[in-house]
Length: 115
Length: 114
Image 1: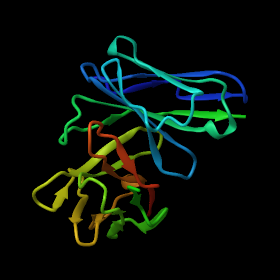
Image 2: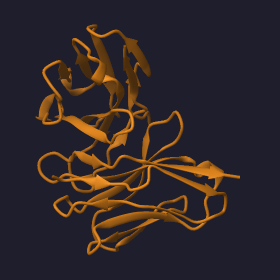
Image 3: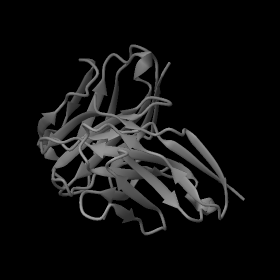
Image 4: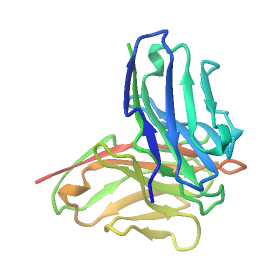
């Protein structure tokens, strides 16, 4: 069974540009989460999808970030326009159901560098 | 505010020595606790979790963690480490409610030396 995949693995862009990150969850997983780790700090929650609906987007830093999950399969996270402080590693995770015994499976992350 | 604290950013240890990675959580956080590991150039992998029942939980590769409610701790231990255990270890707590978002600590880099 394929794990969570993320594309690209690395992205280097200039301030003001747009970047789109993609996450493909494990097949059949309704729950999809985005997290971000800024260098040296903790991994922070960004948002949670249940199928195509946003269940919780309390962690989204501002309106420059837009997440979508059309059709309840893969998800994209767009940053427009990118700022220096957006640099970090963006992780995606998926799970089969949002229960207490559920396990979130993480992808390898996308390392975003904004110059 | 809910939080998870990992007191050590780096822990150097010699191969075959015991190790303890410390994790404390704030009392308002849900008592579902996790340790994740990130090996170089890989994603996060679940190492072990505490949901309920026995306070001592074990992983398949020899790590164990003990949930201590009075000390609000969930320290990770291994009696004898290997070079292959070199990785970054993250303690996390699960936020209660409609979303199971994880609250992470800042991570501990375990560096096993020969």
